[in-house]
Amino acid sequence: MKRGLLALSASAVLFYLGTGFAPIPALTWVAPLPVLWLAARVSGRAAFGVAFLAYLLGLAGQFEFFVRTPSVPLPIGMGILAGSSLLFGLVVLLFRALAGRGLTLAAAFGPPAAWVGVEHLITLVNPSGIIWPLATNQAEVPLVTQIASVTGAWGVEFLVLLVPCAVAAMLSPGTQGRERGQDGRQGRGRGRVRTGVVAGLVCALTLGFGAWRLAGADGGTAQRVAVLSATRYQWAPDAGSADGQALARRYAARIASLPPGVRTVVLPEGAFGTSPSTLPLVVGPLTEAGRGRGVDVVVGVVHTTPAIKYNYSVLLPADGSSAVYYAKWHISPGAPFRKGVDLAFARDGRTGLANCMDLNFAAPSRDYGRAGARLLAVPAADEFGNGWQHSRMGLLRGVESGFALAWAAQWGTPMISDAWGRVLASADTEGTRAPFVVAVADVPAGPAEPTLYARFGDWFGWFCVAGVLLLAGVVLVGDRRDRLLDREGDDLVVAGGDRAGAA
Image 1 (cartoon, rainbow, N blue to C red):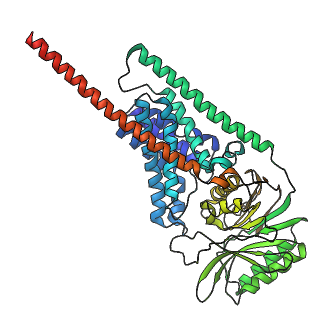
Image 2 (image 1 turned 30 degrees about the vertical axis):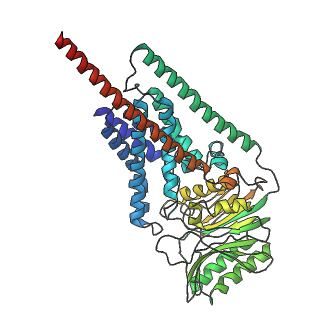
Image 3 (image 1 turned 120 degrees about the vertical axis):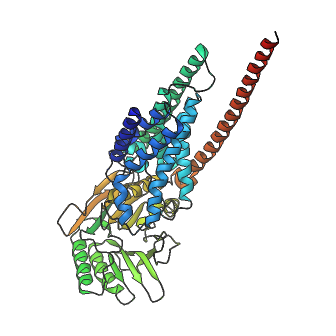
């Protein structure tokens, strides 16, 4: 009882500090370890209960967000919290089953594969997409995140859970099955050594790849990019109102005062609410300011027509040519918007447009990577404290598909990152009394070719699904074999007793 409470408390606190809206990345790696250590020493029911509660309590800092946000319906938000805790509990049960059979290597690699495989399948049906619960916390550790260019962020998610599973597997008390005596102890010892070597090799190769990829960064001509956000949260203020027109003029004045050399500036999602008659009241001042400084302006507008409503990211070219409209692909359930289906680029063909929640999904990010985008301009909203988490999720999409990111949030963390996931500049709309915040950075061109992930997609997620199915087959066959051996042993005992009685 005492060690169960200690493991529960330790993992809950570590998950709370190592995940969420302001994580300490190093703690994410050790948060599962107390529960995994306990799982090999208690009943399955106790292991599941402690794991479920530890993970759920670790998510306590995110409860308020899901209760208050209009972007994720409350049932879906509560389902995410409860469902991810349930998944963690089942993953710990899988670890217990494998470690208890003396399958040390499988206990190290099987649970991370199960975690990733199930999450990957969930993303195929979840209307809110995913913000990776483990990988996102490593977003500002580029040495680790480079593997996302090959495996997607699933590889980071896998690695963060692999390390504690491997340590716990090597520390497990051993098989609960039939191995006995010196040979059994030697087998367990060899299994532990093999597990340590293989897991260590995977980690070393991943970090080595990260170092190699970062060593080749910074190539190509840089372009200067800015993100600009008002610090007063205003969702889609009417462009035809006095306040809306004043806001457009203030944004135009800020664009006119940007540092020399800026070529693209990104404003937030829903910066204005427009209609066919009021749209020129936004486009006119912003286009004029951009043309005066030679800056392409990207702004998010909620555009309402008599027939339909759009959540647009609008590019206003510096040369005064026609505006480019990108309609948001992924809409919160129940939101009255027409979904987009097309990519949209600046005239250079290298700057693409997206919108906030779009980056919760592999598409359109991966489509932009394959199409050669080197910068993704993303008007975003964010809310209730999730700005850092959401912007870093977008950063990981950039690493996956090989583009830099200019993320302009209404309420959160405007940020610019390069194609290798390094944060070049950021600001905070909540920690200042200034009316606007701006972040400016010189952004390297990025890789010359699409990443392997951009080419082949979520192959690693499917690989994990296949691995878990194979592992489940092995476990089921092992259970059947154990039951047969138990039955044969009982028959021998009975037969021996009968012979003794006859004698």
